Length: 215
Image (tube, rainbow, N blue to C red; front, top):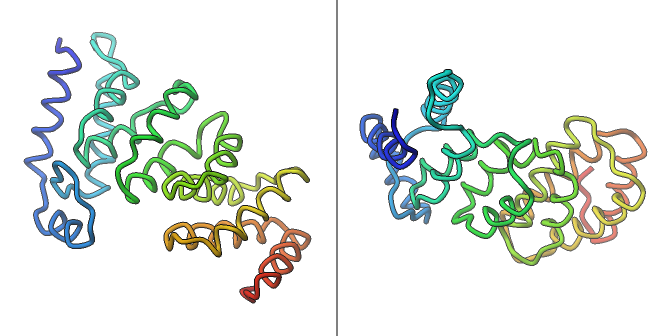
């Protein structure tokens, strides 16, 4: 049996075998600077996540995927952080831990990965999404809109108060300073409109109010 620190070391060494220098260089060229970045592709990381989940489920396993996810997130390594988002059980991460992870998101890529791999599946996802959407921080807003996009895609309809809050924040973000957030807000609005004719009309009316005609 091995402790978590040894396992994290083994996981990091496994990245060296499948590293992709071209991918890593491309990320650096785009401004994605991590302390360490092996350029491992997402499909490879998903394979590794499934391998680790299977190992953790074995009766003789000395670690839990929760503990491993916590340990991996602490590493300032691109692959470790993404793997942590793939491993963390959504029904086990507490809101307080969720808040800590949010504060530590280092890049747009990690914000997107944690939104798609973990945040959208949280039992309290809507509550957090609305909270993040209203933040003045880029990655918080980005996560909020990405999560809401997924919730809308899954047919989750906001209540009246939620609709008003969502539209107000979306209009503000569409006119805000962050390109990434504007794109995420627009995408979420498109999925909001797909909830039904009434929602489409609300989205159309809202965008026209700021002289955007996208529907």
